[in-house]
Length: 406
Image 1: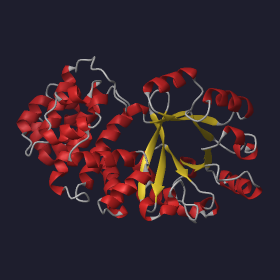
Image 2: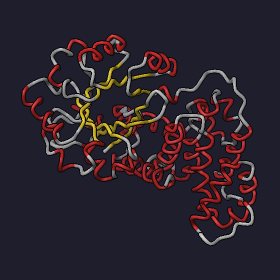
Image 3: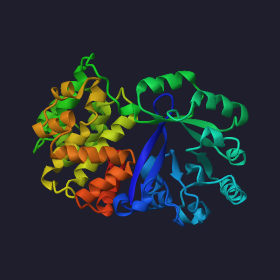
Image 4: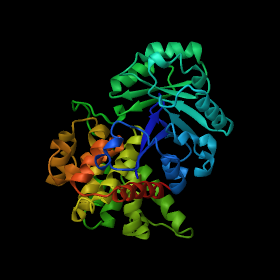
């Protein structure tokens, strides 16, 4: 199936939960799915199937996972579908679950089993009718584009003080900052965290230049260990991290120099460590989700290469994905940011102009991240790509990210 994770931020821009969205079939090959967010004919919950097969830690470490549940699948045997701790699962329902006796009774059973409940897509006119369901609800998503959430916040604060509010569909940092200033929201959801500024007003710090230089080395055909070691030596944090890595691999080793440490690690392990360590340091003043997004997008794009008949360009696709948020990282327009790094014309054309073969996969990954299943389905049909190919590519990127962060 198609599956993606949407981060939920707190007011400090830390990710405290994820929503998992899935799509079992291709929209364009199954027109009846258009306009629906759930598989209402399903007797199981796809999100729980994903969690069970991959493990909740692979998806979200120790955070809660919001799992959409349809008005039919809510009556399925949810306990048997996933053995993840119930307190980690938040069942996400919408207004297709009616404020009727059968639904209310089932929601009470799920609450008794230890699950939390969240509500989305509830219109203002439905607030009063959904009273009995809202009394069971732990979270509610408020779409600031469709309702006046400042008034909704006052309403819920008075009538349902135990419900935690989630401000949704936030497009810009300005809107996020305003909502944060108003206060009262548990989570913030939207693409605001990856929207770049429009003007280049900041100089790139010397340390970030070092990290970019190392990333350029990483994507060369061969990694020159001594040159990489010399650049690592300019940053104390990287040196300490490298020495810790080497000591874990060889407890009795006596490191005589940074070059010695790099040589002991070897090219393969050095590449693996540098990808995580350097990216983490480069993005250190940004939300952790930016680091995760960059690495997952890079690996996902690389994994998609064969499906799009671009296997020979997998390395370029990885670098394109890695640098696709470089404008956010360096606080400058992408065109200026790419002047600092050494990337191919094809990568520049994709990231700056949205043109060329590589841009196709970049657009696909962005649509996929946003659970835009209709456009994802269109592109899959256009390029004769099967759902399993995309699923394997995405799951492979999640597994890779989990492994390199251990």
